[in-house]
Length: 94
Image (cartoon, rainbow, N blue to C red; front, side, top):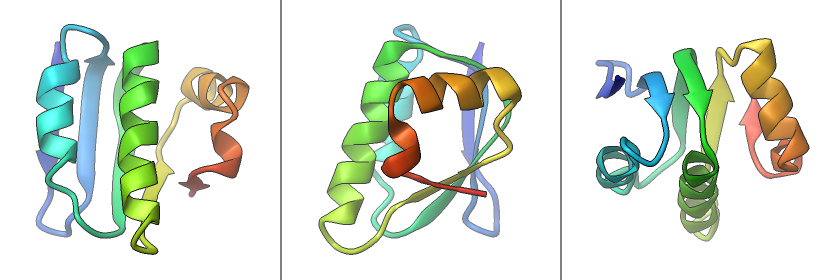
């Protein structure tokens, strides 16, 4: 199961599995982000290639206006996946 919410602080919290089944929900939610935003991955267990593509597309759109996504709370496995995908040079990590 996948869940995506926005906290009062503006942080977007992802939990569960970001895969093909949840990509449409995530896309609709993330396309509403229009400025720098922190994404909390603490509860995210899995990310598929479609999820990686979605994050990259949002980051590209935000970077065009000088903003971007800040990723934090990644477990070691997700951090390795993002590293292998070459995302360390694209995203800011906390």
